[in-house]
Image: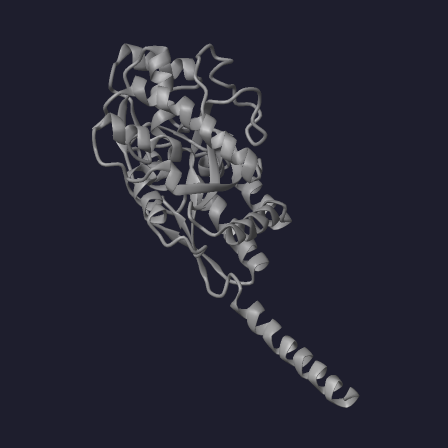
Length: 325
């Protein structure tokens, strides 16, 4: 009896040991994960996504592959993720246009590209004031020079953006409304193409995250006149804020990780842990800071509140902008 009981116990133990690895192998994730950037390469979302994806892949034990799906100021890529299977294998690195585009769709009386409740905030990585950048050979040395020229010659200064109601369009309209000037908006598919257009002389100004133009500033090709924040920028400490220059214009371009809202809680929490690990990874912090953006991490609960507050504020901004075709 003792021997039979012992052998039965040993068999049960062996079976348990055999099952454990199979269970572990079947757990999330078991294959590569797609991290959708809803803009072309070269902009802030792409700059943040690439080192974050590499670090998250190390933490998760599966590759996280950046996939650029540009268009409609970010709406095409965001809508793609909103409709993707909620299984943890399609993620989104969005910018602050995430909270703007649904209200813009409403203003334009068009079918929404997505609803914000289709996606769940997981982590914020950066939150930078945008900067007003012009070519180094432009005639304006200060933002007041820029505004005075725009006032004297309405509509003759062209600025580029990542698309209507995007993170490069909204801050320029906030400034134009406050200063009482008329600027001409030229939309592109993302910050990268807009900066290329600035460098080639197709446009005369952009409002974008510091990371998008910092290398061009260091190379002496671009001059930054002001920023939409408060206080000093860590990477551009000599650049004044618009408030310091006397304009009531403030805007932050943040980047954050989202997943489809119906993603299982266990998977969401695993991604939350991987995002936190990435934000604390020395290589990620160095890569993003060297590009021009310090990490300003927010974990899921705080980021959810931040997104809700930003959506409320941006809805009022978009209403003031009105219909932009």
